[in-house]
Length: 154
Image 1 (cartoon, rainbow, N blue to C red):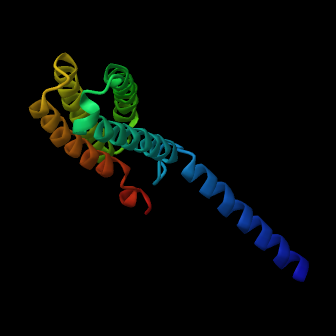
Image 2: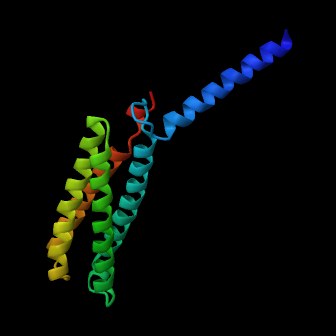
Image 3: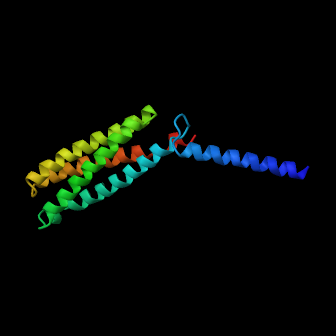
């Protein structure tokens, strides 16, 4: 009798493990699309690193630094890479809310990228740096919306 109970418990535990693995690995039709969430968290991490780099680069003492051109080129390269990643997230999103949050993050990144191009043409312009800080704050907010996993947990 105890042997059959033990076998039943092992079978049930195995089924639960298989379902959880399938659920969090991004199987289409599952409640949680784990692959998309992993991509969103990765994009969030890269976006926050970009946000920090932009915040550091727009400080008054770093705008006129000798290595400012190299710093801005790196920021623009990272922004372009993140834009591709956000486009992929938007295209692969299963839920409309996910698609919308990826589109919002991409749109705010593109707006920020345009401001970065303006600043690279005249690096000492404090007014343009202030516009970048404002657009960077909007970008950060859209990243936080992208990362919010609460709708996916249940």
